[in-house]
Amino acid sequence: MTLAMKPSLVLQKLRAGQHVVCFKSNLADARVVEIAALSGFDCIWLDQEHIGQDWSILAAQIWAAQAQNKDTLVRVPRGSYSDYVKPLELNASGIMVPHVMGPEDARNVVRMTRFHPVGIRAIDGGNADGAYTAADFKQYLQDANRQRFVILQIEDPEPLEQLEEIAQIDGFDMLFFGPGDFSQAIGAPGEMDHPKIKAARHRVVEVARKFGKFAGTTGSLETLEDYQKMGYQFLSLGADVVGLSRYCAELMAGFNQRNQDGAASGYYNA
Image (cartoon, rainbow, N blue to C red; front, side):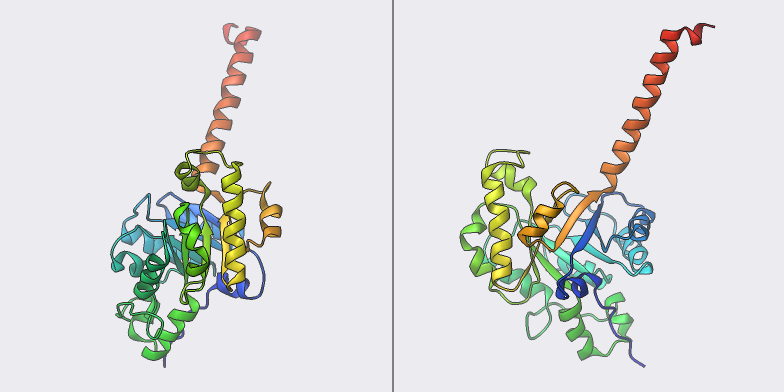
């Protein structure tokens, strides 16, 4: 008996023309991932570029999402091919490579992350994605190329000049616009309504759709409809640290207000 690779929910929905909603997890506890998956998010974004979780933590987070039939996206650090393929071997549904700067950079990502005949990804097959050698070898290579997604993150002005050449490269699935770093790169950190950011956001989705790639970005409930109308099918809408920070701040604000009200009324002096 051979085992088939579990299909990607994200790719299934995107290929059907549907929208995908993603949630970013910065915290190390796999239960955070499980909570987001139970809430209904299609995909949980696990970040290795800025956080660098231990591999055992990353494995547990991937398992937590899979237990609820949800996908995981791992944003990898810029590094060696091992940094790119290890999340895939842990059975992450896909990876996102940050700060892709041009066509040759994009081609190199494809070479390192896709198997023959698309690339020359290093082969093991003895990890979770290959069912610990229980998967048929050739079928494993085909499934990995078809059912695991590769995203190129566009978050600098430089690649915009060659974006069409990048988008025509075979072997990756999505262009993802990152407005945060882009805002810094144009000298307007945090100014998300800057005209250059608006223009870049439109440019990324336009080129992606023109050449048969999906488009993704970060957003909010307030921007959701506008971005979907632009053509963005993949949207990351929130993060665990944002929710927890706001919840704690709201609790303390309420606590402090009640303390002030109690002191003003003389209750605490009774």
